[in-house]
Image 1 (spheres, rainbow, N blue to C red):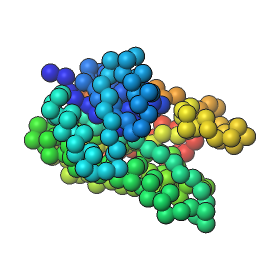
Image 2: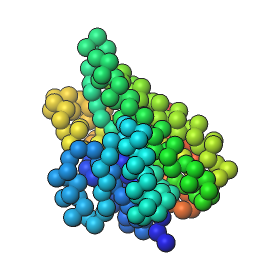
Image 3: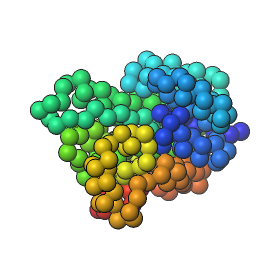
Length: 240
């Protein structure tokens, strides 16, 4: 029986590429989304991947979503925490609601969904968790103290949870994408984007599929000796 995989923010951009990659692995994929019904319906029609709408910020909403998936498809054994937003601004201009929104969506969602799926993974002695961080969580970025804090938190969260899951056959890893050619990055002003690309040694933005290939590796059944790791997929932009 195919393993059930949940990808948050899984109907657009990097998340859509991850959902498709996991489907090609033979997983039963469910793609979560938050607001864009039209995009989700189009994605489902084009790919045959089931979609589910719930707010990853809310624990009760996540609880209901996980329960629905488990009832309809079976226990979640592969979890990709990909959902993320930005609310950029320098600290003097950043409001508390901008901070809260980014921390709740990008980092809080990892807690919510890991908390709600971890016990079932322990019982089945198998689990693959991949949390999507960011190069800006590793290196920092001007005007993104909220985003950098949330993504940096993901990397620490990943290492700590990996230690809890290892004895139960659960691996917990992170991917740290660099700048990827998605709708979010394309919204950056052209002159700023050109400066960003100039700092990438391979000379281009990443593709969503570049990130998806990393997730495919980490979620494979035989990737059981890789845990607590962060794979940086950034074209050489940040090396450490």
